[in-house]
Image 1 (cartoon, rainbow, N blue to C red):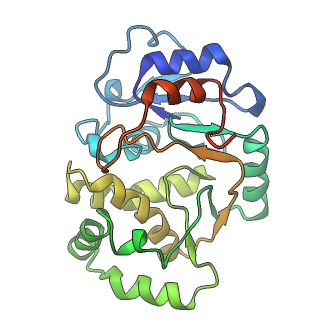
Image 2: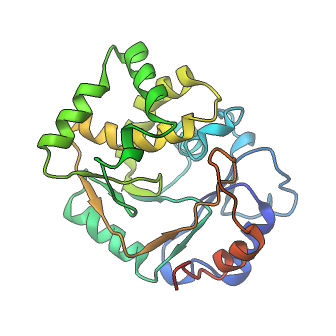
Length: 250
């Protein structure tokens, strides 16, 4: 879990947020916030303290923790779920995710499928234009025609929509290797986190990996903590729900 608030992390631990999952939980603490209350915990990794980190790029959001895990050899299992701090999970979240990866090991599992024809995928959003420009500059690839053709012809016409996903460790390593040059080209600007979300689907298209979807096991509160979108939420109320692992619609 990527997280940037040590008090919220402690609340998660006190409420035993992940107790029903029966799988190890590692927190990757990102950003420049205080860590004095959590640095002693064995299941906490402070990304900025690692030898290889990109914590100066805060708008890359969760990718900074993905990068930290891969580039510093942080131990995970063969399969790994990469989730944001602002989610609540059903009791069978881990078992359903693992079952999906057992059915299709090379796939990427998502939890919030949205149709690729939706305007937020490659049209009216912040992330598509910088991702397209980066792919042209870094890899000499125009992703516009590619994605439009894929949307028309592919059987799977959805994308995972957020960066809450599960995959094999090897797939994670491949993604980080591929996306890092694009991330560094785009730099530390507000749209790059949105580009990162869309890049997950693009990576699957380019590498022939399938996307699987488990839409009923994760609730994403979309807290907008980096203020890259035009809305605000009641953080105090929602943090209490998150700590108790109550799904927003429940």
